[in-house]
Length: 532
Image 1 (cartoon, rainbow, N blue to C red):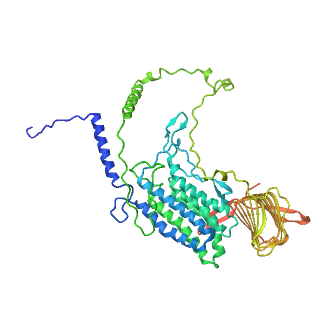
Image 2: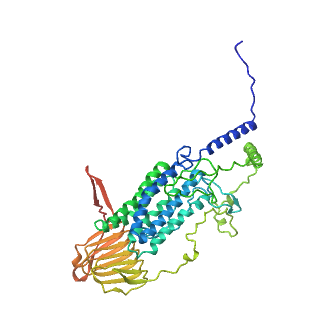
Image 3: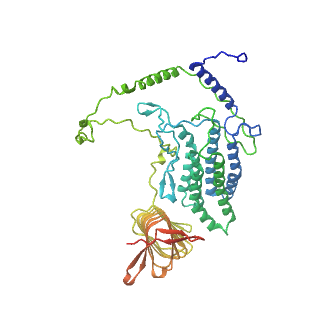
């Protein structure tokens, strides 16, 4: 056909194609470097700062600033604690800035293991020490670079998260060192919820993790609201300001980091030595963006060696059935499951290399704190509070000189017996084990929190006994206290003993199992009766 035009066909070899793809990738990288991270391509006044960093700055300027302002007005331990919380938030901002300008570092943990990035935190609501585990998603079957059985580089992400971990530990340690503080409920509310800063290492649901930590503070914030509701409005505002931080943080995570911390798709890989800009001062413009990352290094001769290795591998695979010709047959007498005598034979047992476990970060810079001596035993009156703490194997503890306005706080006592004579306002047992308590009269409430195997006997009258997070509790009521209300939550093995004729007691278990049904209008909960 005269209208047909025949063009020469140019054959592109595999080497040339690889070179073209490489040039294209470099061109794309240059374009992406001009717009590093989410929200950094705009021409607004915040040029150079990622959009989600700007949103975090808004959170710092809003709820966090209000919380700091009210904490300063309250003063004392609350103000000191707030400054530590602010330090943790600023450490988190530094990580967000780094994530917006760097790619996520590779992990060296094997398989889908978890990296323990936070030191054990002392949580009153969890029965002592509890390890806050931040889940770090690791690519399956990822192997670290090794020399023998020793990894030659540390988990980079755990190093980047270490400043946040240290701030969390500092906040929790402050609460433990100030258990006698008048603002103990404030300190506990913060200490229970501060692990929420660990959302940066949670995947794929960081938002629900923050909510869980916020709920852990509700027990103490409700106490504050109950105590100061009609007395001091400033304390109520403090609770609202503090809880609003975590509420706003949940909304922030849902918008920008739904399935985990968002890292930049370009730029260098984040390392321990990478520096991120500090937080801008209030009212000042954000700092200008840093210099562009260095160009990618030119491919070395190692790529040629890798190509040769792959070629050799495919050559062996293409041998077909001949690839198994070098394998040795294993007869039945050599199989341990068919010849049990082989299991009993001595000799060294060959095993593979031990799996790698990431080293735990140091909890405190001062190693002497790890070996600190046991806390001293206390039985003293501090203001209007009787403090009974760290008693062990003490069977004759007695508090006799009491007044109606006084309260008793019993903490971390083991294998001991305490008798409180006279009429007192309230009694709290916290983190005790195998403790016996005998008291005359209480006009308020007796609280048993986070304890095990405790026995409480009422000689006079008490209106309410509260049992929370306790396993094993026997309550002996007197004839004058039969109308006592017993409120329990998250507890087990509870028994109430009612006085009978002849000085004996009749034991009744407190129900632990319930049935809830929908009756068409509301949920109806009843105790489940178990036969036998």
